[in-house]
Amino acid sequence: MHILTTPGELVRPQQADWQVELRQAVRDGRELCRRLGLPSERAGPAGQFPVFVPPSFLARMRCGDADDPLLRQVLPGAEETVEVPGFSADPVGDAAAAWQAGVLQKYAGRVLLVTTGACAVHCRYCFRRHFPYQELPRGDAAWEDALATIAADTSISEVILSGGDPLMLVDQRLRWLLERIAAVPHVARLRVHTRLPIVIPTRVTEELLAAFSALRLPTTVVLHANHAQELNDQVARSVDCLRGAGVLLLNQAVLLRGVNDSVVAQQTLSERLLAVGVLPYYLHQLDRVTGAAHFEVPVVEGKQIVAALRERLPGYLVPTYVQEVPGEPSKTVL
Ligand SMILES: *Cc1c(COP(=O)(O)O)cnc(C)c1O
Ligand code: SF4
Image (tube, rainbow, N blue to C red; front, side, top):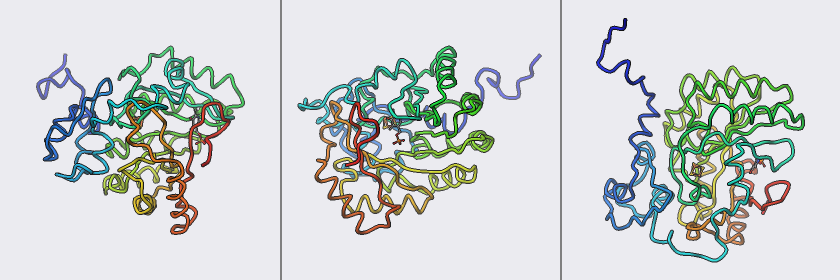
């Protein structure tokens, strides 16, 4: 027989801080504006891709500033409803297929595992905005299928956990998955593509760190921050902890109009990344997804920004400017 020390103890297991953050996320554009002291009419319709902004990310936005670079990434504007030629629902082409199969291989030696559809924040420029949104992790059979695919192909030396955001999985699940991947002898490297340590730094739990520390594989976490303002002291502490667990930290950003489309914004981002212990990896040209045209910066302008960056920063702080071209054997360097 159980004796309850607090009412409901057996009803709901204790949620971790990061899960509470997710529960408290703002899910409405007008509410987001209100919290920032902006007129609620600034929010456009979110369509099928609802607004989703946890308080920890909201806290880094400037009140009263409609042009705040973090707000611009997450607030739907009226521009989203404008149809622009050349922009489509699935510009990466194979995205929908990967969603179902769970395993995507485009490049030699590397396989990308779609672990979950959920993210800790909804970025308006993301190609995932047109996917049918689902928060549930995939079932056991799908995991086993993906693991069997990896085990059967000795050409695979690197497994990349992607999504959605793989750190949306709870620690126990993640640890199980990491251990299973590490048990495949020909897998030599592990990579995790995640925005969670940026959006909700408390996601870097003791359990997560223990799972990384215990891994035999060299592990790289590729974060996703687009602006220096995202990298506050809590992010710095979480990055420190990850480094302590032996993880190499890189960052990928997307070149976004009105967010980071200046030499100063990119330079500041690179310098701040280094200050917190992360190296810039890729700067992505925007995927041409419907509703995101207002974020596009022409490639010629992007090249100018990167060239200017190269004159101001050491080479290791200049990200590689790339584009995803369907059918190519690697990302295309611009
Ligand atoms: C971007 C990407 C990778 C990783 O490419 P790197 O150049 O190694 O960072 C792997 N698989 C897929 C499907 C990708 O889109
Ligand atoms: S996949 Fe990445 S960019 Fe897209 S919504 Fe999720 S966190 Fe944002």
